[in-house]
Image (cartoon, rainbow, N blue to C red; front, side, top):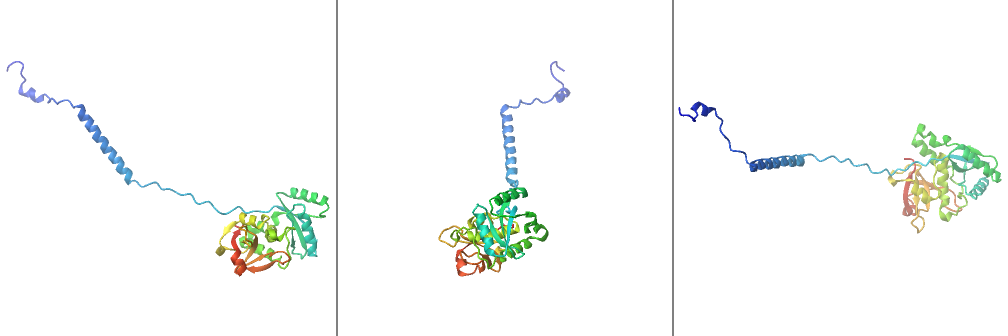
Length: 280
């Protein structure tokens, strides 16, 4: 065996020498891996279900129910004209006074809408010192039909509204001395009826139209209000109380008595402007 040469056994045990890995090869591998990884991400992103979008419900068109507060009641007249004169006198002081036929058969007058009993009492005392009224009674909202609705149901309240409106039938109605040409006679009736059951409405027919919740004619219920445009103006000028069966109670105007009319009459059908409810 010559010196410096490996034996066959040594040659077999020596590992084979490998050429060094080039930088280009590493870059190629890294780039290829990145492309593959990006492809996986894109494919998984395209096949993933889109997120579920939950749309918010549309805002409710219903409006808050206008509850009446404490009211001042005065007078007890057998003669309707005396109640009318007292209501006019109170209206002259800027009070929303109205007269009505009490279950006793006497005509009485109510005015004011106060948040608490003491405020109502103090106001009544001030009016009494002016000599306009004598004795008075504070009517609590707890005694109203609205307060009993939770126990007896909304149908009960609707029937009470219609019953109150029917108690005005045949009575010549003039609202607080305001001229009928401005439409306040009819709105004074609806305001009085609603106040008697424990609900507070604005004074004019236009304001009542704006304050209520719209209801289609096919969905009208007893006690809802129906509105009309009886002049060339676009404004609401007349209002009545729906009683069912296409009928409504209203104050037609100056020197006329409160009566029942039909929505299907030619006159009111042409002038019908819409309906509103306050009992939703």
